Length: 158
Image 1: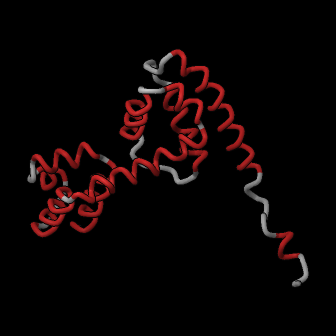
Image 2: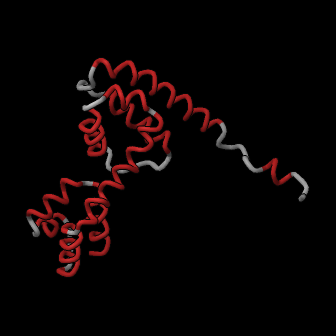
């Protein structure tokens, strides 16, 4: 089933600027990694070479970074120049994202807790913000059964 392989290759390329660069350097690489028809291989080669692919990768990375930056701003600041390296390592280790911002932030914090290369100055921020994220996630889970619109439906029409 080559369509599924084509789609997988496209998502992998979107998530990995390094794979895009490698695909540009070696046009046969994608055919080695995925089962593709000649047409699919040619299309992926054109996609990888296009100027828009760099922007596509940036948008993907921005969407993955947003939950971390919004829920752990002190941690991001404390990581400083290490943020790019550590977030890239996280994305490599966890290629599948979670669209729930708190879940994604908790996963990143848990990933960092296990690493020895987090700067000592960032460990305090990690501890504080990881606790906040876990608390907010627990509160969200506790409210999961609530009907947020029940009161509005119970009101008579104006």
